[in-house]
Length: 354
Image 1 (cartoon, rainbow, N blue to C red):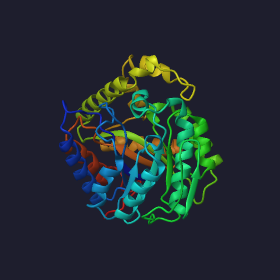
Image 2: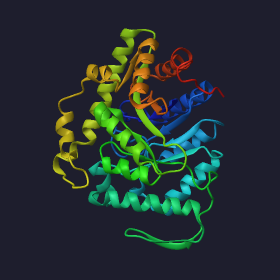
Image 3: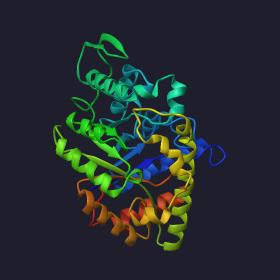
Image 4: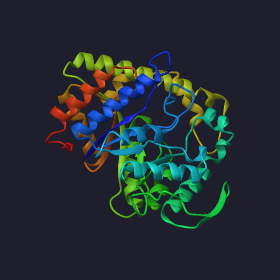
């Protein structure tokens, strides 16, 4: 099992200035590199406290690339529908060069109606745009004199510069939370999988992981990346209190972001109309911890959670730990990383010290 960190800010100016949040995150990147964590990732979202501090993952990851030498850098995920494929392919290839070939390129469809409206893109087109643009990006990375004549974009012949360091291209991940079809399509195309256990039942996630592995048609071993909000402390009571604070704030941020689904319906997103209604009922923190959807507690407690998760999904999965959404302090997040590295992971899933 490989362990890294993911940044998903759920704060705004009233909570923490953006420059302070970014500074704290980059200091955590330094610490993760020092302690031997596998990767660092960051999301792409807009407008809301739900991820809105990160409208461009490549900007943050370029800053991280300049201060690290080993740790891998992942988009989690960037949205092809919101950029021209030539532009996004070029930005990601440049990041792969700046990092000397450490990019993991994850792509997502997006799901917030307000984001699609702002970009002037029909939400019903999201799957078709996603499929077309990811294919175009891969072609631009791996071929020369590319000619593309798609439903949404036409260009060429063009040869992208710079060429990616990783050949034929950086690893491609698909981020999905609900669709079984998206999981199967990703596996058949040789794309790795990212998903969020908090968005589904254990049985639902097990089904997706089994399907993905069964349908895998790519080169090498398939990668499954799972993201978990994480708070670790030697003080069990403090860890539960801090974990609850973080989870309730994250849920409130998500609730606001999905509110527009009350007035939107899309055949491309079956069941999403119920999101706002479901979140209005609040967050059951205790149930999430009991179901191992949140990693919260003392080092011994979290070690037990990790062993259980590995038993469910296999010890070849990769975990991305959300240690700093912005509601707790930098010191709290750094303490979580140190305790995991020093007391939880040795002998369980060893890290690779820089």
